[in-house]
Amino acid sequence: MIDPKDVTFTTDNVHIPNSYRYSREEVEDFVKDAKPKHPSCQPLQKRSKGSLLREWAAHKLAYLVGFKRERTASVDLNYPQRWWVKLLYFVVGGFALILETVSEIFV
Image 1 (cartoon, rainbow, N blue to C red):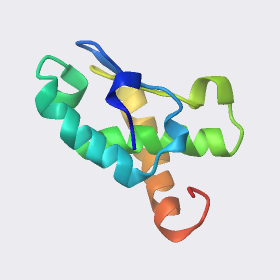
Image 2 (image 1 turned 30 degrees about the horizontal axis):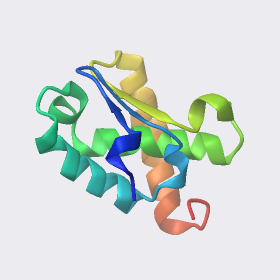
Image 3 (image 1 turned 120 degrees about the vertical axis):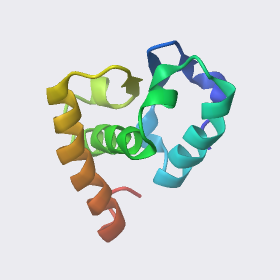
């Protein structure tokens, strides 16, 4: 379970430290619970749940395969995002969410 005391909320960012430790369900529950509690936090208010989950999943996959672990261990959910960042997370994060459902890599 994600402890909200460990998470940093600003108007344009949500920083979840060591996000690779959490399951998809924990991230979904966290987003659902945090959204009404942080009305000025634009990532939670303006981005879709799918977009936030794909970004988390991309970071988790990158961490699990050993890619820049010092940067991918935690996730920064930002708003706004550049178009190429959206595209990257759509492709890589979508792939990671598929992997999560069909393999044991995300356990």
